[in-house]
Image (cartoon, rainbow, N blue to C red; front, side, top):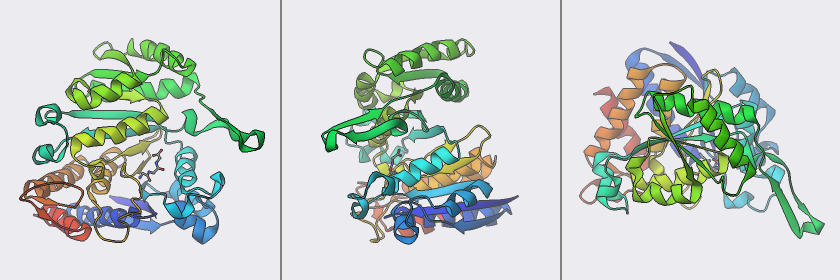
Length: 356
Ligand code: GGG
């Protein structure tokens, strides 16, 4: 199969981890006789510095012509004082909106020999295997107006959702649950927010089309607590944009490191952008210390979700698992007795095991 992939390295460790994922995709293509072509484009702070925009038109056009997009990370202190239209994050939110990537899938699955890498007790982390389905193109991150008023002394952000936006993400979650353990936890703040009340109503309506899937509603504060005290009670969590952003970072504690969490952001037709959940980690950028596994696992998600290459994706996931079993790990993971390696060596190890 021939596939054209646009790579958006972005900022900080984004360049290092996207390069690692690209190398693994090249190795998978070679192993399975596919032809993957890659085209690099700018996004985030790097794009601001180079082109004066966090999301240049050329980047959007290239992504629209691609079969899939691989992204590293955006952001960094260099651009922290920029006005909001020149923030790196504007590029990431913009590309999600441009490509209509409303469904963000964030699987959280522990690897057996990383159980003690989590600060949580082993019995809490064991058997945690959940999928966070985060709405990605609505809510507070996109609502207007979002502005300062009264000479900067007051501020407004808008949390807006339409029925259509809620329905399509909730359906995605039920579809996902129906091929997993058949349980959906819908997370909201319906005791306070009007948007959450509509969210809850729609979840109830959609659930009628999936009688085999059980559903429960949970307030976001309770969900935040249960995620790290009894994570095995969750199968699929569906929630709005900001709650999903926060809960998935929290859930990374279950895997031992934020550097282990991959994600897929999909539109209606299976087109997707794939990126690690972590950000640009400016404190370690350029030092070769970054954990490439979240980006590599995101590449595996690309093969599965956008290209239907399940065997190829499985091979990458097994190679990652095997590398960790053999004790290889980057500095973010505490694996006593294992071998701490840099980004490049971790990537090479995965590639060697993929080809073995
Ligand atoms: N690879 C993820 C990334 O770059 N995250 C930085 C960020 O701005 N995240 C906000 C979000 O994911 O909504």
